[in-house]
Image (cartoon, rainbow, N blue to C red; front, top):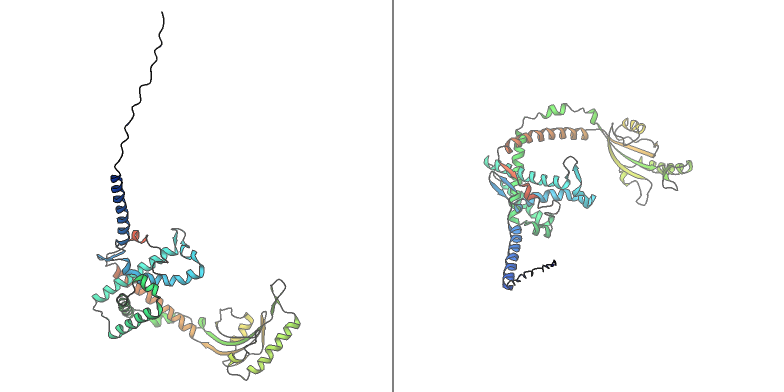
Amino acid sequence: MNKTKKIIKNPKQEVKEKKNINPKIWMVTSIVLLIALVGSLLFDQLYKRTIITIDGDKYYMEDLTYYIYGIESAHDYYSQMFGAQYWDMVIDQSTGSTTRDMAMDEAMNSALYTEILYREAIADGYTLTDEDKETVEKNVASLLDEQLTEKVIEKNGFTKEYLTDVLSKTTLVSRYRQDIIDSLDIDDEAIKAEIDYDEYRQYDVEYVFISTETQDEDNKTVAMNDTEKEAVHDKINSLYETALETEDWSELIPEEEKELIYRERSFLERDTVFSEELETIIMAMDNDSISEILEDESGYYFVRMINNNSSESYDNAVQNAITNAEEEGFNEVYNEISDQYEKEVNKKALKRYRMGNITL
């Protein structure tokens, strides 16, 4: 019986009909997408994001530029000193916060501080005095005519009206703050009594110096040999004779002289301006007296005691202690005031801005 092979042929593949899309549809779709893209970009650029809210009142970036400018300007000095990496230096290893983050916090805190205290001052009946208004006017003129560049003024909208408004607030807040401090129960005399005068007794002197050190072939500092030391000793000794008869030592040294140096200096007993041996000799001097030529390991000196009992350092220490007490007391009052306000900083919106070039 013959077996017949059945050959099964592949069925014809169904040819799909290619549909042509009307070019007009493509054009309309493209235009719609382009309009949507441009619209979203314009919306992103023009939409005003709330940065700070205080009791429901909204503050936008243009309201805060002066506060940001103040902080950016303060940090700009260090940015120029340390270079571009300054702004991104990590200052808190635990959080990764950078100088840029810290500066932004400073700016927002400055804005909250001023706006909250201004509201409080107004509520307490404070208004600008004629003297305050005159001060504001002068400060605004100084900013526009001398301190701010045209680029900064234009970039930040620092008009006369805007600056007058902001400086009016800061001026009123400054007076309100001082009145709060004056009302604090701070005993200045008690603070003063806690500071030991002897610890801050200051000695004011003037002196002429010549070094007995030189550079060797490897540019290392080494002591002069005996011949060289004798030469510089003779030089300072010849000037010493003139100094004994001269009132104004700042005029002693000729302009072309490079080795002899004149200086005025103030120091405390715990300082290390001079060697311990020299310091002991100088501290024992009477006012207006002139030492002999003195020597330490670095050179020769002769010294005149101007004031062996100056209270300048002591007075500064007392004032700093009083100021610190005032700051602590004021901060407590401010925190109590601040807690009465509902406030919020929009951290998400701030991420759009890079501190360091917002206003500068």
